[in-house]
Image 1 (tube, helix red, strand yellow):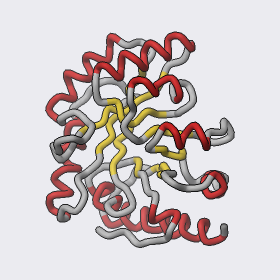
Image 2 (image 1 turned 90 degrees about the vertical axis):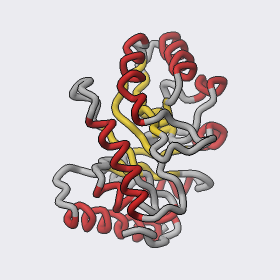
Image 3 (image 1 turned 180 degrees about the vertical axis):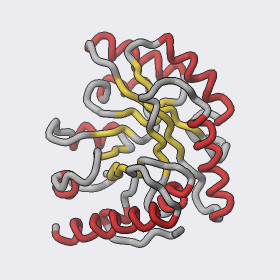
Image 4 (image 1 turned 180 degrees about the horizontal axis):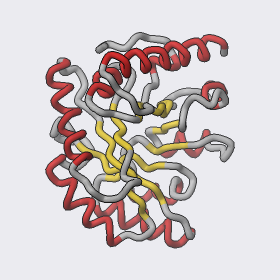
Amino acid sequence: MDKLIGNLNKLLSEVEEAKYRYSVKYDVGLVAAGKFRSTEELKTVFSTGKIEAIGENRVQEFREKYTPDMTWDMIGQLQTNKVKYVVGKVRLIQSLDRIALAEEIQKTAEKRGVVQQCLVEINSGSEENKGGIEAEELKEFVKRMQDFPNIKLRGVMAVAPRGIGETQLEKCFLKARDAFRSIDFSDNFDILSMGMSEDFSVAIKCGSNLIRPGRILFDGASSIIK
């Protein structure tokens, strides 16, 4: 597992380089995308204390790997019938993108006596068949969330379309950032989750303070876009 630690330290160095390059003064947190990774790998990186949480895309994988000894985020699309498996167990549901999902989270969280923290997912590339609301809908969506006392919004998550150039990528990230900054909700609406292995440097340039690397962390591959 020494290679994993080496990959993590290299990634942390690249994050610091990006922060320096773009004059970013705030902390940029890491959520390790755990899709298809073994529990042993996840425990190795989490035990360093250098990542905030393990992010899972699929509820089934989360259920198989879950242990309360680690902090978890749900970063993939969440079906309403699977809400019961994650509420109260994950730090953040990063993919809240519709009222029906909020209703189910509220119902489950209220029943369990917890307040579930969530991020609103924005479809920054306006892609069909992809989760997330349009950036222009964020204010109204946040307003609607005031009807759900067991949901605490902490910010915004965005996934950029794959295979686009840096200029278009930056445009997508800036759209999500501007929507995030337009919300005067509370001091705790403070998380902008953008950037994965191939584009985290551009995401940091555009204001991300939480990135979700997977491949670059576990396989050691380099970022595609610097």
